[in-house]
Amino acid sequence: MRLAGVSGSLRARRSMVMTRHAVMDIERTAREHPDTPAREVVPEDVIKVLRMHMTVDKRYRSRAPPEPSIADFAVDTARLAGFIPKKRQPLPGTGKLWQGYLILLNFVENYRIMMQMERE
Image (cartoon, rainbow, N blue to C red):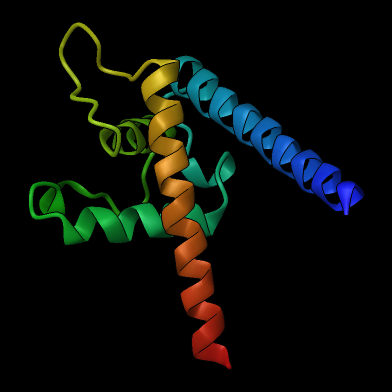
């Protein structure tokens, strides 16, 4: 019984480490190479779910490009956590990007469950 709890916590820790690396990659690439296509850094289904969210939200419907750059992806992800880009700070910091990415991963998990239920 106790081993199962340890195994679960190791899985959760591994997931957080993978998420931390993903956020660091997104942030670094957005700052160093902002025109890089997001699909080169982020999985396709994550981009697809963010695009779906952006097209549902009326404020961003006209702004969602079909092929986002990594900088666009970083800003849109951080918007989920309340980031508002400004002239002095066009890209989000690590904290807002982290918060937005965790929200986005919840959306992605729900999307994957929904798609799996439709297949069955």
